Image (cartoon, rainbow, N blue to C red; front, top):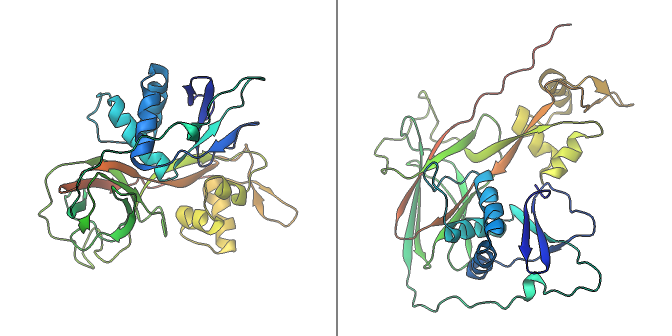
Length: 323
């Protein structure tokens, strides 16, 4: 991402990085802050059209569905959604080196603007996750909810697919999915937000469809094409995962022998190291690992009920070969 996602701030140039992106040479990571101050700072940058295009590309790349198709987000909305991605740690900011004998302010040294002082009182926030096709509520989805005062809660959808938070502070909430325990079988993809509150009854245990007691994970799935020199360990580290979590997501197992079998059958590995374990190569066909990435839904207003409509992810197609 860093090759084209650059921001200009006077004499300074910054690069927006994904979690898996390497820090470019001579660049250094900077602290962007969070909350209203971060939104205000990004809004200042977004007043430049080139910066606005960069931030908008980043927001759309992360699958934000709060805008109608073909509708461009405003500067304010782009700034809010980008701030949510930075706050949740899905994006990082690196500062490019200055030309010699040039002085420019540090990103963090820009004077902070205090948010408006308003009287606050306890409010509420409701979420419901439903199947986009059947409208059946989905239970067992764990979410991180960052509230207006920058505090954070974790909650899990109940048998009616609901999360009800009471006594929350004023201000919009950012919602991020939790990837713990994610597998291809239990992962759901966000289709859109909005729509009427579901009146369907939850699926009963043992019935066709989703089990009300099953764990489900909300995520988007990226495909990583393996190449020479990579290992399962290096790919996992690149995306901030453990080897166990990466193997569990792709194949539902952490057993070393089973992992070796799946590397042959589904990744198409054909080379082995000196210990007889499969290693990745650019010649592997299809040579793809699936990577779970969190879903972030920013700026959900309090004292409102919000619907997240989801669907099952496509089933992976096995790699077929003949001997």
